[in-house]
Every structure is written in structure tokens, then in C-alpha cells.
Image (cartoon, rainbow, N blue to C red; front, side, top):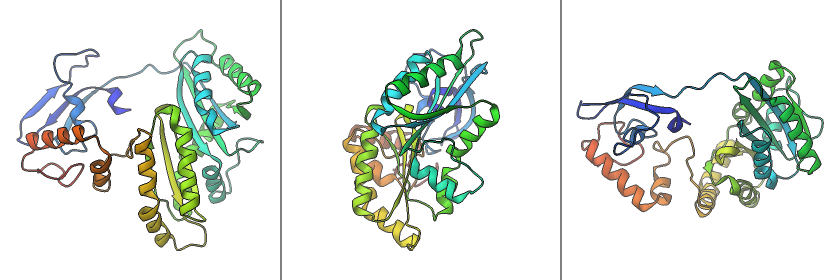
Length: 314
């Protein structure tokens, strides 16, 4: 995530002055961490003109696996086992629902299901290491054996080549395109604690099943970050625009309320912009909202920086 990768920033402020702290120090506790104010602020506090980034060594070994999991409640257990077995080398841990994968396979007939055994839920897992001596593939093979033995997965495949790895990732990354093919979706960019992710998905799914008859759920996300894209696709024979409006009006508020009750957020990675300003006002911590408005008023009293986004003009 950007917040973890940015070491320094240069920013032109609303009054024309320059904030510059580009030194790539990994430890700097000399007062407030000012750069974090501008990351995720969507240009409402200043214009970023330069950045110092943390870089990582290119991995010597990468292992990618596609797994059919037995029960969505086991997501946290599988992630924990994967981290232990690989020595904390997991770089991606993606959940993909069967309905999301099926939307894609229906939209693109040239694509094939990656596993023989079908399931309601899948995991795309990737581990990488810069070590030339750690046997990552051996660790991954051991992991799959352990997961099979515990009954946590019903099928799995480790990519045997770069081409197969790319094919696994193509399936995951093409899901948004498949949603567009089927008439688009009402998107919910949710984050909760990793330990509560499965419970959120189950509870939110019941809301959609009850209040949006015929809807197709497209659920996928970044389990390691507790982030799930919980999207609602209209039924095939429905009036797509009318159906999506009904979901936004009657269903989305319940999903956002559920996320809030579980200590989560309604904007994990997409930001606030204009569309989610009311959600920030409704579910944001009161103390945080006061600080956001105070910072905006202090740095941009005339409201000239990306006006109407994130927070109302002072």
C-alpha cells in the first residue's frame, strides 16, 4: 500500500509555498509525520510534485497457487498456515468467489477453470523470497499437503511456469471486466479485520439474498489486508439501471452499516471523492472528522484544492 511505500514527499501547498521532505529515511520521529496528511487526501490539501519511495529487491523465487477452499470461515486459518509454512513470505492472498469466477468464464469462453474440483470459494496465493537458499516451492508443496490433510482445501494447483502463473492472475484481475460485460455492478469497497472477513461476507450475502432478489454476487478481495470487493451484479433479464438504483437505495446502506458494526470501513482503497462524503460523515469517528475539517480549513481556507472532494469546503 502507498502508505507503507512512501518515505518522503514534496508538495505545493494552497498558498504557493513548498513542503519538501524527500530524504528517504526509514526512521524519523522528529515531530508529526506530515507526509501522511497528503497520502489519500486526493489533492485536497496540496499538489504532490515529488516522492521518495521504498524499493524492494527483486525476488529470486516466486510460487503461485490456486486453491479451492472447503469453507470461507477457514480463510484466516489458511492464511496463518501459509505464513508459517513459508516463513512469512506471502505477498498476495486473494479470495475469489465461485460466482465471480463464473461471471468471467461466461463472459470469456476462451478461458478455462483452473481446477478440476469446483468450490464456492477460492484462494489465489503467492509467496516470494529474495533468498537463494530457502526452498520456497518445497515449502508451498508442504503447505498444500498440510491444508489437504486438515480438510481446509479440496483442490489446488501450483503454477508450473510463468505462463500458468500469469493465467492464474489473469483470472483474478479480469473479474471487474466480467462485471461490466454482465451489465456492471454496485460496488462496495469494504475492509474489516482479517479475522472478521468471512463473517462479513456471509452476513452481507444474506442481506443481498433477502433484499435484492435474483442479484448475482461478485465477491473478491485482498484477504491479507481485510479488504473485500463486495459487488452486486443485476440479474440477466432485469432492467440493469433500475435494479442497480434499487440496490444502492435499499441494500447498500445495510452493507455499510454492517461494516461499521464490525469495526470496518466503507472505503478501503478507492478513497472518498464526492460519492462517499456522506458515508464519511455518517460512519467516520467524530474526532477524526473534526481533525480532517480543521486541517482542511488551516491549509486551504479558500477551498481551492480539488473542491467538493473528501470534505466540504470550509
